[in-house]
Length: 394
Image 1 (cartoon, rainbow, N blue to C red):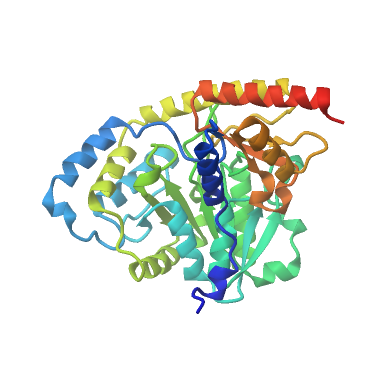
Image 2: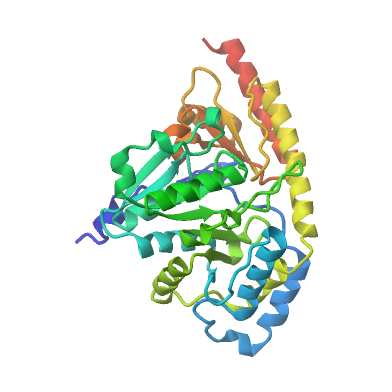
């Protein structure tokens, strides 16, 4: 007897779980693997957040079920953050929803707004969960192309009319994973106008909104006049406050979409542990000095890696957001072929661009989630590998 639905059976294994297994096997063989694949911060969560969690976890009153939409303190902290950071007003009761991480929220939203066969416009290259979540919701993923020449922003004129008519939801992601692309308000203005014209709802994944460099401040789609009529935005404390394993995020924006997501969630989970929500509130109510320090560290790592890549004649754009570098593969290689060679010969895990969609061919992604000295070690190994290629290769 076989178990599992057709949708689950036809879904490829999650890419980063495969990398985890490869890394585990190599380590068992005594190989020192440097993992630049998965985008999980290596820096610790700030001590003031841990202190707040400790205090709240010791309070037995916090060991009950949380309100389905999230506790009042966390939702108010999200609303206050949006007012201070974006000058956007939010009603904590109807326009803010606590999530068990933005990944969960995005997957649940897709199920909440589409019916079987409906389409979802997803970025290509883009975060793989968008496509898998659409698949599990019995929908149709409709990739829209992003390319370097256009700054990795959507060109709606390139979309097939049939796809637009089939779509119910448009997903955006800036600063973008995997490309590190950043945008100005104009991109969101066009997205909101396009969505209203075609009666779509918009979900903006802003998981990396606070991981920015060189004075750049990522905008919110909700800053666009009328955006609340059609859009929701997802935020996460994973990347900005190094709270990846804590699983705490939020959705904000259009009341109807928030309510649909809340209905879906209330029937499938019971919100996040109250002490974690209250620790998250402390994070959002802070002065963000720890976020700025994180970004300073990531920027130093970025400069180190970009210099090393340049010395290998790999020239990548310097991102203004995320802790990823999106780099072109050397001539003569596919994305998959190059990352396999680097893993086999240098013991360094990179992510092939094709893991993020067909338009990712020709690129690979580097995560800056290891200390500078490990990044330099990865560069040194890759240089030795490349030197050997020149002397012994064709």
